[in-house]
Length: 321
Length: 261
Image 1 (cartoon, rainbow over the protein chains, first blue to last red):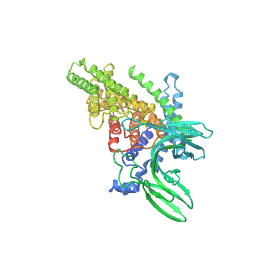
Image 2 (cartoon, rainbow over the protein chains, first blue to last red):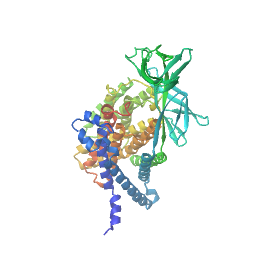
Image 3 (cartoon, rainbow over the protein chains, first blue to last red):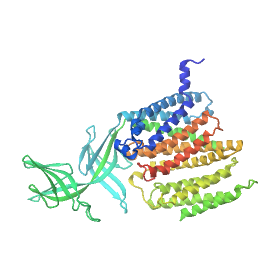
């Protein structure tokens, strides 16, 4: 007669339990693979008018962060851990030449991976900085970075070929960030995440002095300020023409306590200045990530790969033997 | 043009196999495996031609993925002839050749434009090449397993059923580590480098995981159930159909990060 701990151990190391949990996780994943995840309530009401209530009530819109999926995944991790321990100790009892450690490395790699993923879920910090050339931004911990240069190359058909941002770090060192080639800096990883073109509004005073404003920025003038709010196009630009030709700048002019919204085109007056049109600029979207789970996830993948390699070599030997 | 020549080679291979398929003396045709090899080499040449044109390994579009998959299956058909222990090689080679033809036919359809386009920045990664190539090599073995599983279900003779079952298992056991490394491990590493996340529950990732879970379930059920159970071939067939849905269906029915392949 087995004791309760022995029964529990046998139950948790059971391959049948593993297979059962894998099937359940697969079924839930199919549901999550069919129903788009994490969308708004309005999306489900529009896309699945007959089933939206059920989807939202059962939280099928958030399967992978839902309690059922997480409980099954946790149980599977426990099963995998106990199974791996049992299997590994069993293999050690065999003669060295009969040992098969490929599945052990794969299983332990998966456990390390799950641990890393949990750490990532709890500790990951992420922020996106949009910087134009010469602009400085701060990472969430206050580390300042300045975009010193950005290069964009395009193929003849207009598709992007490469995006690169040169970044000046505190202390003056310059580092390069490219798509697929992130920069690791003081525990942060900076990715070339986005790239877009923007426009600055150009102004000139009576003396011919010019200044420009990025969208959302304010310029102080005597007794008030000019805020560049938005760009308005009453009709699309003609093919081949400058994309901002005919576009107007939406400004908020504050003077002597009075506020006035202006929609101005090239040459229109704005207080003591005149609006001189738009100046195009490229903006680099940099994603900064701090993730304590990173080394564990990477180690988990490395172990899993090693386990797969050992398993593969053995299978191949068996096939051509 | 090269792909068309490869298609003709595969048709010749299939026709030669069909002629000899029903011979009772068991004699093997002398040309089908060479025709399959020729098709595989032609498709490899087509990939090299496209790679030279874009100065990058041509594995970044649906068309290129399909000719790569067809190339792998054609070479597998050739290799089958030299696995002398296989008594059921003819039927498996026939099914696999038919699958290679299907992949190539799909490559010539409007679903897979054949325009030669150099890759956008996110696709310019060595990890992507490992991700795609290992995934498809794994899937080529899954294709062989799929054919064996169908033959297993159709076989009336118990000995044949066992033979097909063993072959299906061998195919999956070889394809599974390659698919796991390619689809999940290398895919996640590429995603981390390109987008800063290992995993984002993108539809293609989710369906890739479902494919992996299906084959994982198969390998675990093998440990606890009799080999003669019909569940085994059914899981192998389901796994391959899910893999093909992940490859094609997700692109056309669901949107996500993998819109290009």
